[in-house]
Image (tube, rainbow, N blue to C red; front, top):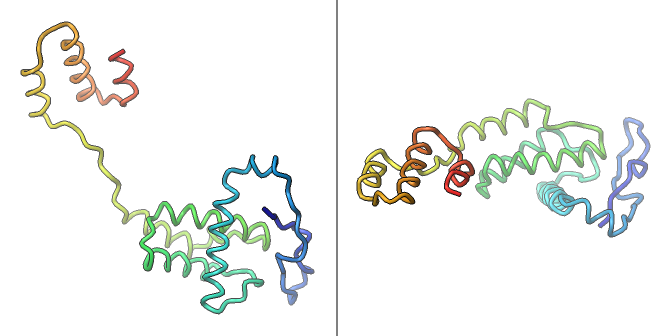
Length: 173
């Protein structure tokens, strides 16, 4: 894997193009193994660059917040990505943009409001739970041996006490 250094950026004058490909630093395998997310971040970045090329943008120029928003909108509309995935991708891409161009595009209202609007619309999955009738049927039909009495007590405590599954498992041990 190759990581580009900040020193590889072109001169900081306003008219100069900043090129992220000038100087490369190759990291040792030991360092790369510690960077678990490096491959994922790289894939998101390369996908963003490919999209920019496809729509005719100059990949050597710093992207605008509008560009990132359009890319995220493209993924949502054309590829049906979930809001949480888009937040992850935007964060990974933004990390590279901050590194190369010292811009934080996620803080821009264009990007932030777009991501928030999708987060609000995505329905959260409701966990399945037993109905009151199912619990009552279990309490009536299960035998009254000491082992099953313990399970009945745990079922009542879990249902009406709002226990987490780890707490329920602990009660059964």
